Length: 404
Image: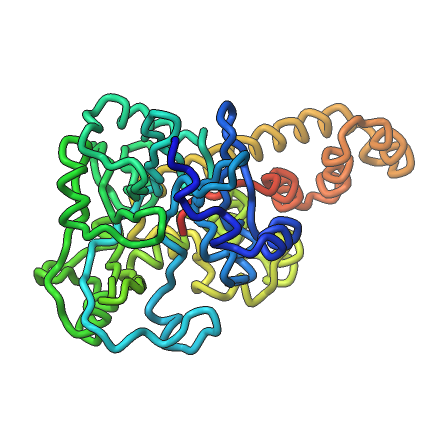
């Protein structure tokens, strides 16, 4: 690291006050390396959600700097946007340049930021030195010959292995797919040149033949690959365009976008509600909406069969997960119904004395059992009360995708 003075520093790249303000506002996270004097800077979900895209947030996408010298150690690609965002005049996505562009495959994994520091090649994921993806990438790299890699160049690759699947099904493939490489001054190393360094480490992203933008967008909309074969959402993610000046944009297959929204957006609570709508199909919509914390419009959407609609054309693993969640909810509901049966059997002798029955109910330990007793006394169903009670806590979706 004797040359560190020659590298631009973090504050040459990003004004110190703006970076500090972005961290304070929760738009950029800074995480320290567990052993080395390094920090990794990455835009947060809040920045993504609120679309706070500026000079600082777009640049912090796995940017690594030395805490003691301020030198930039890894300089990844800035955040880039969908072609549609450029075409709809979003302030953060200016019009695309009128230049020729190359078309790369968009690989659906996790970003690996590969850099050289203190005598070793190291791997971070987009936001962490120690995430499971970074650890997997480091082990993979450690088992490979890195002699051809050039210190001072940041290599960006996509981490693929079965347990890290997002939407696209790569089967049993385990790979570090080279996407791009940058010198620390921000100059991009031509992919063909970087690919020579990468030999023996992993594969290199597929490059498709050049084509007009309108043609490429038509392929994305119709879920078709440049060779003409059709691609379901689990076959491919889409394309990355790299213009002659280095500007990048992405175009995702419409089916991929639909599935991605499902697998990263649907939680156990959504399944509880969707299954509930179908399970209590005969009930008055207003009563059901109240029981399931939703609106009558939610119930009428998808023709009253939201779970069926959800499971049309989804990856097998997602389908399995949804069915497992439904089975465990049904199981929990059945156990509660059993407990209600038992409690009611013990109080049934007081059925003719409402006051005595009420006093006995008050002494029962569980709130949900108490709520069900009078429904039982009046021969009304306890099922919706029970279903409301097995509602999952706010929970994670089937998969999270930090990259997108």
